[in-house]
Length: 371
Image (cartoon, rainbow, N blue to C red; front, side, top):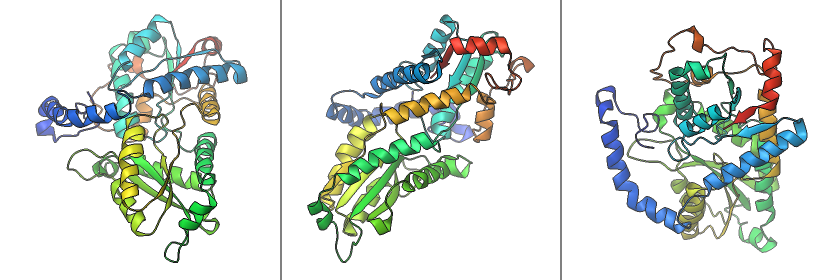
């Protein structure tokens, strides 16, 4: 499913009919390594467990802090529960106001964009169910710059920085390396061609890191920040520098104390628990980085959960952004579906915002949802 998506593996137009075959070949080649990786973390990823917990806690925060009664639905792009299953349940529950919240802080064509395209296709196919007269929706395309999110990440990093002992700080300080503590933000990579095509991901990652960095000690205070990209697939050029290149370089520079931060992940899963905690940790130790720390993913951090609730509450009271508007604004190309009629055009008024019907606003307070 993952490699069959053109948002993940893009083939030239003449080769696009071979997408499924290419996906099959890649999957078969990677299957043994993937199986071994999952076995190393207990046989499965905890991402669904964390996502459910995040949704439940966000619902509680919405009710306790805003008086909003909401229900969450989880739609995965490449595995169960699929987005289509979530939409079926939404229809069964009679939801009429939907906040679409991708759990990717930074927008990329290959992540949020791919998920939104699936929703766009489903909405276009069933305007009788998802048209503006039946269901209001709004999208939160990215949220890397929200103060609550930035603060929650910074707090987790600070805890790891504070854990270095005086002996470790002394070990990490030398004539060649005067800065004793280092932070490496390791973000999920995307092909460089996506950025050239207008994907905002790289610029959002850089901006996000700068915002978090502003809440942490400076170089003058003994902390230096680095950024790299992980999880590349295939022979094409991906965003650089690669994490597995940066770690040996830091070792050569005499870095001993390192906090690694999985910046584009909000839940623990294979790329934090195996790729970072096992593969990259081993690489760091091999290159002399003796005092390794890894900042946890946000998971169910209270500041993060409350900020998600704030996001939803804000989205219900601000001018909305439709799926199509979010895709266009973020340069998601190759949108092959065309709306059949003006019935699928989405109103720009928010739930409770300017131009929104009062009856629907009241109903939305009783029945709202998030994915």
